[in-house]
Amino acid sequence: MRPIFLLTCLLFLFQSSHLCAQPRHSLLSALKSRLIQVKTEGKGGFQGKCIRLIISNKSTNSLTIEVPPGQMFISGDSSVQDLIVTQREEVVLIPGAIRAVELYTMCTQSYNAGPSQGEDFVLGEMAEGHLLSLVQTIDSGHYQNSSAQSAVWSVANREPVSCIYGEDTSMIRRLAREVSGATGIPISQFMLVPRAHHITSINTSLETLINKHLSRAQLALFDRAGRRIRTYFQDRKVEKGFMQWRVGASHTLGDSAVLYLRLSEGDSVIFEKQISATDSITPLKRYHSQAVLIYEAKTDLRADIGVYDAEGNLYFILAENKLIPKGMHRSTYIVGKDLPENQRFEVRIVTQGNVLAGEVLNPDAPVPVVYPPRTVSGAYAFDIDQPLHNVRLAIYDAEGRPKRILYDIAVMNPGHKRFTYSFEHRDGPEARFYLRLTDTEGNTLQEKEIW
Image (cartoon, rainbow, N blue to C red; front, top):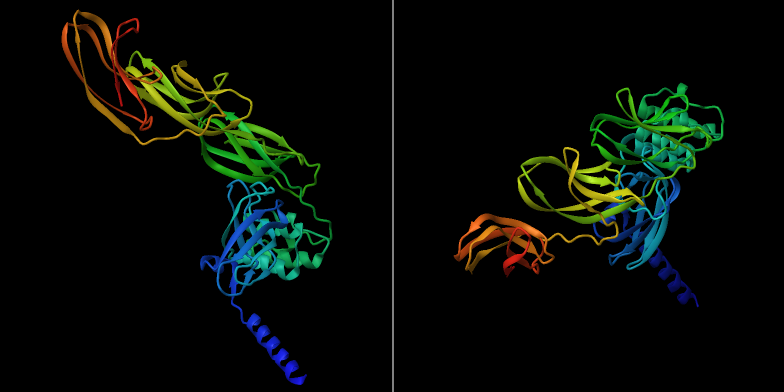
């Protein structure tokens, strides 16, 4: 029995030494070396276990994957906060294994909305400097709470240190030292008296129609007394039309606090919205459709082209003060915009306050296909046996809409006629067109199919 027992012990020691010797990699380095594949799943929330990783070992070796504090995850939506890992995690993977792990994270952009369930994230780089030092302190102290989240916002976004407080004064002192070192604010200005900490998390949005271009716009959050809580941007150029800003308005003033989102330029308030703890982001509908406008300009003119609502309010500018030459025109506009739901919108060409042409947008239309330009050219010959007056030779599409006017002829004498043509289109390789000679009443006198 002794030899068998000894062999078993040796085998156990060999396997243990093999496991201990398996390579160790950070999540970032293993992904860059293509040793693993990583899928991220946002779980929602601004602090806690807010992200889930599914890690696949694609190598032929067992791996130990470390996710250190300070690892960043970047949101796929620029209006949603990025996340930073605040507690070290370790995953052991044999070759071909797939493991799921949930990470403790905190948000790093107080001005953005908090992540929702199913939010998309991609692996970013490691944090550096004071922010990295802070999350390492959070990791070592196991401070996975809202007080530490406020400290992260203070270092990352210069949020007020008055938001950093809590019942554990030892924790607050450690966090305060980190934040003080990052911001230069002395410890004496921190709230070190024990007090329960609570963050009111608000995701909200501001929607408004702006009737002029703004050159130095500012969006900020204020309390009822007019004190500025947060500045989202300032000195920004904003085009006239419809705008939506999706923002985070998290604070420590209590759930009953009333706040105001204010868009202004200089001393003028453009728009103001009252927000509360129950606020949410107003949903918009994606309009991704094509408008084809056929119109005639009697003279050379200047026009604005944009998306308007049924009352004539401008929502988006497509072209401003555009020169439109005299003659027939067929213009195609592809619109990809987020607009308020349950409203009627159309693309309009407006000159001196008058609508020259317009077409209603279909929000349920399939995404239009954009074909490369194609040139159609050739010659058109025919005979006429009597004089024709005030005729037009033009190119039409298969639905009878004019593409281009080639000639307006006051008098066409009898005989053999030959006209050359050349035009460019984006209607696709299967598109068919017609050359038509018509009279003043639109009757077709001659016709030829071309492609």
